[in-house]
Length: 173
Image (cartoon, rainbow, N blue to C red; front, side, top):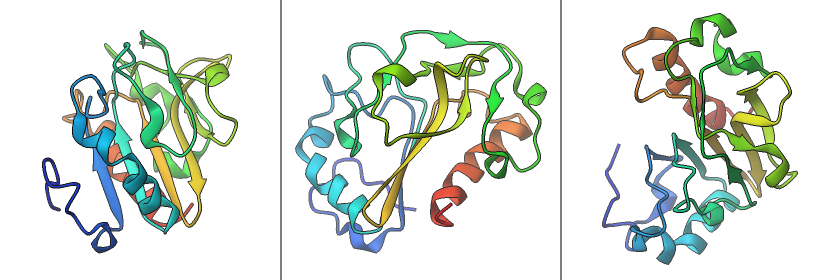
């Protein structure tokens, strides 16, 4: 893959099937590049591209405007066993395999997010805190994965979940 940091404005996104955004890239108080290219990113998804975002910070820097629909994050973390709502994404993994120090950073606030988001996993039994959500927009999809996949990448279950998240949108689930 290509690193588009600092090159997004000039990049021809039609050359890509998926854009992957890693930990805390969507921090609008420090990232003028994303702010300046919000429309370009939305057009990319609407035209059939996909965006997969991992582990974003739920503090005041969070701004979901890169996504086609609003999404709120909760300033907190979950250490409990997640609820896996769509087993296809988890490649046979069981919820117990995710337990550890931190399972989900800054869960998605289901009540404060647009209803176009579909939840593939939750950070709590009451399904008030999302762990992974996806939305269709035009011909493409946007997926946000708040599991601690990058912090725990050495664990096979987290490494698999990271890869499966990308496959999920590429296969148009």
